[in-house]
Image 1 (tube, rainbow, N blue to C red):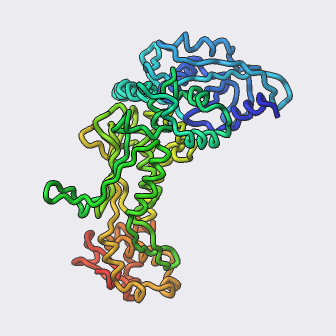
Image 2 (tube, one colour; image 1 turned 60 degrees about the horizontal axis):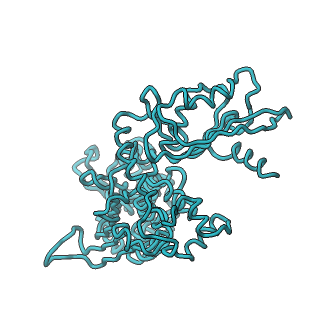
Length: 479
């Protein structure tokens, strides 16, 4: 297979998403301009005309196809401002053996300005869709242009001497290349005119504190559930990680793991499982998101990770970017620092799609913990709060659980009863309506299962009557 064949195969098989989209050659030329605008306003990407969504080459030689010249002219016809891009016409062979062509637009991200259509509409690439932005979203995008340019800024007085050769060597191994260090940095946009860019400094230099003292991760552990000061100061750990990001991330990950307590919860088949108080994916993904999406041009603040007895808070300077809101944060994706994000993708710490936030929710649920909470304190930072429910768990651990919940008990329970027992152990008290939701049955069915467990001397209840909506159930011995 030649390089050309491999490239065509890539265009056919690469999953459509943030960085690539395929369209039939019958698409409206204005829609092509919209997609070009969307890619340019995000992280750049490839728009392929003449290949179907399923990867089949349809080309331009069919009755519904428009002339490729219409698409080549579309940016000039419909865009108010033209982004940097190149187009290429590639000769291809279709399944029936006939020769045809496809058209590929290679679009660069626009750091200097928003790419707007002549009708004043603005589009942004979010996952596998090119979405039209509202007025407020456009305003937010304009605001974020300053931050996105900042990672491209040259760091005055920096040079190749600031680069850690071990980190460059590791990065080249990840890219599977042996190119010269300085040539690689220039090719990837991490160095210009003999100076490192902000992104280059963050990724490859251990001299960050000299040039960008706020670009650090600070971990603080407190005794108790609130932050005290003065004579009542309750900070018991205060550690700063300010080396190049690959090193800082690894060091912070190892250290935070040493600070996490453990708890036991009741798993499937009646087995007790001991795990850290938070799922590692949840807090580590939260930390990575803080690193990738913070505003590095905000020199007055840094990433803070605060650990209290009952919760973990991860704060990142800068409000939510562009189209992302507290309501859509699980689905929307926007990379404030695309070069930084692209580099950290090589380490498998950043994902191309936005499944990370959704998985944080899923992991917390698997640990029988409350949903994570995202907030924007003072509209100047983004904070993720993970609650651990450690107090209730510790109380349950002190109970004589081995005498109450045994593998033999689980063998005697049906599937719904077993699910109820697991959730009552891990969550404490629950109402009948909540239990109905857990077992995915009606409230009467839930009450029937609870009655069966009461008769087995496993479950007891608090409440005035069986129809009291606030009546709660708990495992005997755990009240």
